[in-house]
Length: 130
Image 1 (cartoon, one colour):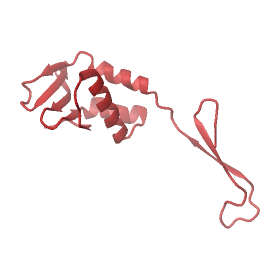
Image 2 (cartoon, one colour; image 1 turned 90 degrees about the vertical axis):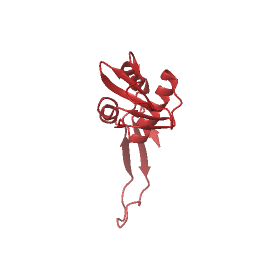
Image 3 (tube, one colour; image 1 turned 180 degrees about the horizontal axis):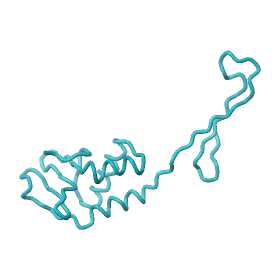
Image 4 (cartoon, helix red, strand yellow; image 1 turned 180 degrees about the vertical axis):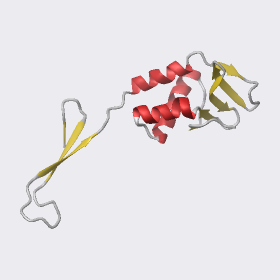
């Protein structure tokens, strides 16, 4: 296995004769390319959203609601420590712009919210509760 100078390709050599039903085949290579994820850029994106959030305790009695400019970005359930975050302004952007999957997005949001808002989060969801 090899990587290029930018660590953006991994090359696997396939030994001679590996291809099924082909005699005297030559050595081949398969190149897997992947997009390098810039976690600092993602963290800055989320911190920009979190900057200036206003806490609203009246929105729903069992939740801490975090809003900015009248828009609800986060809701934290006080009883079960579940965090709900906005699908359109957070989840879908992380998925489309950074090609992250649901589990990675949830973990990333949970870590940054725990770190910046000092919330003990058990579970995260990319939607807001009704």
